[in-house]
Image (cartoon, rainbow, N blue to C red; front, side, top):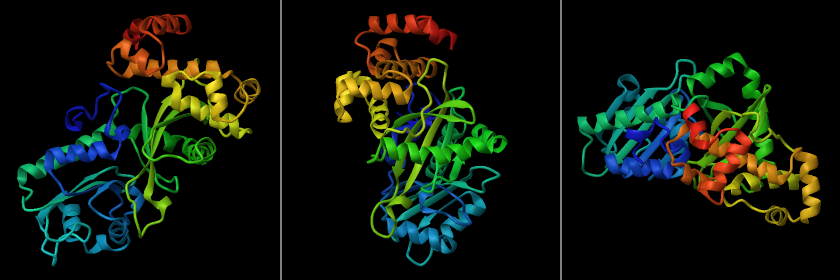
Length: 368
């Protein structure tokens, strides 16, 4: 999909923030043909490596050095701070201390918020072809489209949050930031619970994959879809500092999955993660029990004891929760939603949805 065309829509439930940096770089390559690219949400006074959302064509040590001191001597960056954009051929004597010498380069900056002091930062470089005014304007439009996709989600009730490697807040959309200011305990609980729950459910967490958890944040059940991403890899930077956390927050409905924090039994916690990750294939009780190395009978008792609901009903609630979201926020055909959420057929999905939600999927979509 093209982020300039669809970055702020929910036509398929995907945005640059859910599809990951590879798709974003492909969009940049298609539009502006960069050999080197860096996208970040930086504090121009003290940029940090974990604010970088996308890095291609640069090693981690170059980014680390730029964050530590290089940005202060980066003429291209400093000129962009004054004028929002700068472009030139890097001859090694001036220009950018981040982008390689000998390339045509461009930097764009867009203020992110008045309170944080951060700016959206896009740096691109390519050989031979200068970034003319049209290319600079196109880059500015793309950066502003990315900002709008993050800050102004088209889906009602959706909040977007970016946390750094230390789980400190890097950025949030304006409504979510306002909520954090009114209820600082929401952010505090999120930062406290997220690492504990994630480390228990996914001891070996894969970068870039989307996962789902449900937590109680200040009395509000919250569905959190998250992705941990590493923009930087390689020597010169600690692995943990290379990560940031992208979160989507949605309120839980009364028939959605129950909010569960860290659990007393690690097997049940891993089972909750397994069900969340495999709802599309409708795993059986035996499948889940085998995944956590427990007999089906014993596992069922454990799950009900610690989760307060049977594995079968937990799975069904996940499937319906995702289905309701897709009906509400996208134009995906109902038959495709049935398949994507693990139902055997369009008819099975429609009958189950009507029985448990009270209306048909098409009526739910119209009402939503």
